[in-house]
Image (cartoon, rainbow, N blue to C red; front, side, top):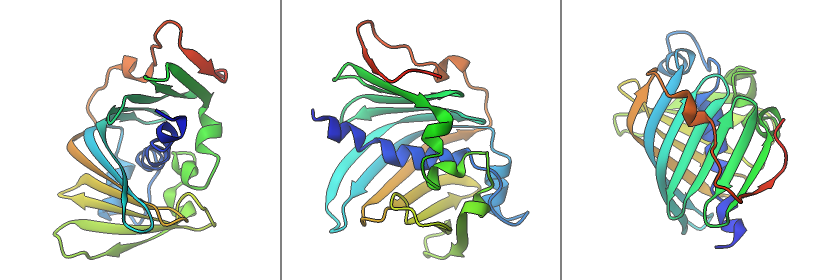
Length: 212
C-alpha cells in the first residue's frame, strides 16, 4: 500500500489528540470547559470518515484510542490497515505494520508545528481558537472552533458533547477536506496501563528519525 495512504491517517489523530490534551477552553461552568479542565485520561473506540471537498469519501477507518495527560496517547488504527501512533511524553512514534516501518519525532516538535498542534496543555485552547456554541437540533451540545491564526491544516473544528461525554469531533481543513471522528464506549479518568504509551517494535523494523 502506498506510503501516502498511510500518512493520510495521521493528521486527524493529531488534531483530536491535541484537543483532548488541551487546557481549559471557555468560561467556567460551560460544559466544554468542564470537560477539558477535569480530563486526565480518555479511552474509547472510534470510527473515522474522511471526505474530500466534493463530498466523496476517501477513507473510512476504525480503531481504539487511549490518552493520558500530559503528553501521552496511543491511537491504534485497525482498519482498513494497521497503524499505531504513540506519544510517550517525549517522542511521537508512528508504526506502519505492512511497511514494517516506523518514524519518530520529538513530541514538542510534532505538536508545535501548527497552531492546531499547539492545543496540548502548553497553552489554553482559548488563546488559539475562537469558539461559539451552535445548535444542530440533534440533542447534542455542539461547539464550533476556528483558529485565531491562519492554518491550512485546520480551518474549523466542531465538537459534540452528549450528557457530558465527548461524542464527535469534526475537522475541516483549508482544502475543504472533512474528517469526522465518532467515539464509542468512551471512558474518562480511569487508570491506564503505562505500557500503552511505549511502542514495542518488531525486530527488523526500519526506523526513520531518532528519539530525543
